[in-house]
Length: 435
Ligand code: PMP
Image 1 (cartoon, helix red, strand yellow):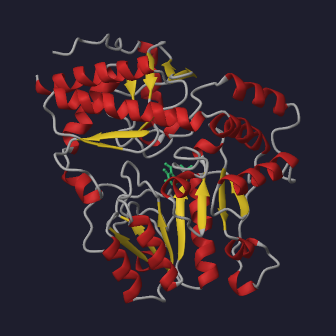
Image 2: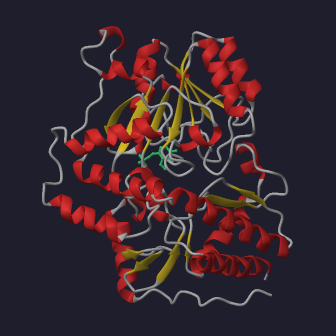
Image 3: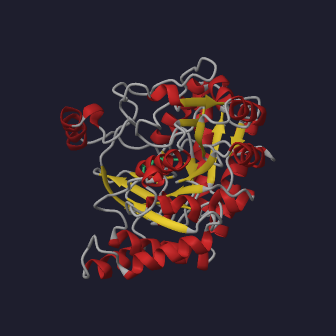
């Protein structure tokens, strides 16, 4: 029987008041659609290394890492110093800064598909502009995305990313208020199914401007040969292949999933880990596509892209520091070591508890699906025991582990002792589910 961890104390009256107030002021009491379960809400005070602290001083071992960007952990001393020193030069200038040009140089150096770069402020902006570019250049409206893939909040992205059933390849809208007619241009396919993709593209070779995919979709790695098949099918039909590497970029390898899996897309989106936690994203890609962002390019293929905070100076400086640590100083290798350990330790806990598990994730990402078969696409996710998974994750929070319900991240401040702590609390949480 797993030993009981020290559970979080009950929230103070002041924290309860803040949670109540947040629900009056912010719809669902949150700043996004990710809503914590009732009773497990907390109000953050600060982060430090691998830990997040709430206003009562309760401590959470953090595997959520700011939804992914905090590969260096919270308040890394070198990032803090970068911010302090850079802020003296102004936070933002709109005019292009030398350090932003140098950052573009680094992206071209590291990322195989990158010949030119445009910056934006968030991942959603990047996927929006990548899709607009693909459609502008090809003159084709159609977009293929994958069931369960998340690419942000805009009209071309909010389709079939939750566990909503789909009818054939028909997309399911995740929001009302989407521009009329968009759904006609979206086709949703199962991930890791090369023949479904080949067939969709070859049945209508002139229909699709883009295929957009995360090379490692949420917590689901690509099967061997799948991304290669995707590349070939896109080449045969002149479809732009977009890798959304907002999550995988600078995490799976210096050149992201495309380097790690050895398949080069036409256009790539980057964000999250790139800056270690500052709002900045990038669209990078082959020159033949990217040059259509230039207002002087052929008007019939021009893609408009603008934004006050594009290339935000403070974020560019943070990106340099983060990339120094991740790439020049071996950070990514360490993330891989930690990620393998997290998966091994957690899998052992499930096996010891007799709980069927598909331990998913590559590199620094991990996620245990409550499933007796390997989870390879979103139908497998739906077939897994999501209710039990949710109950397990709620127990983790009670034990002081903060992890997204669909994915876990390790970061550089994590140690083997932290992963043992994760395993210990996971064992306790599984035992609790049986009580
Ligand atoms: N693409 C992927 C793969 C993501 O995981 C996310 C965010 N979770 C986005 C795009 C959107 O990024 P943002 O939240 O910065 O708009």
